Length: 71
Image 1: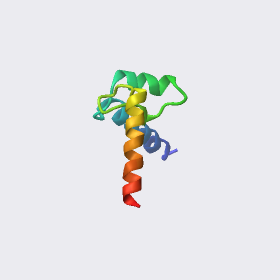
Image 2: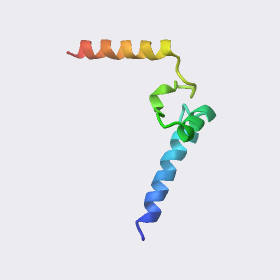
Image 3: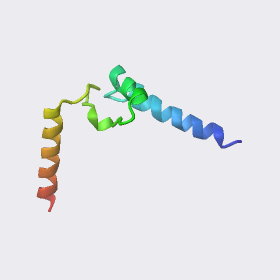
Image 4: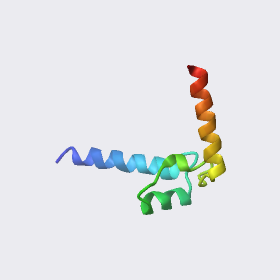
């Protein structure tokens, strides 16, 4: 019984941070979190707006360049 409070508090704190206090927090991001099964934080940019296909492709290309440079 004593472990229930800290677990629920930690869960609530994580949700509040990610959806309210984070730099990229937005209403659209919170709506997607509660309404979509396939929610992924990486689908949102630094302003909390959903990324376009072009932005996602650019990010993937940049990631693959970093990986190839590290090898």
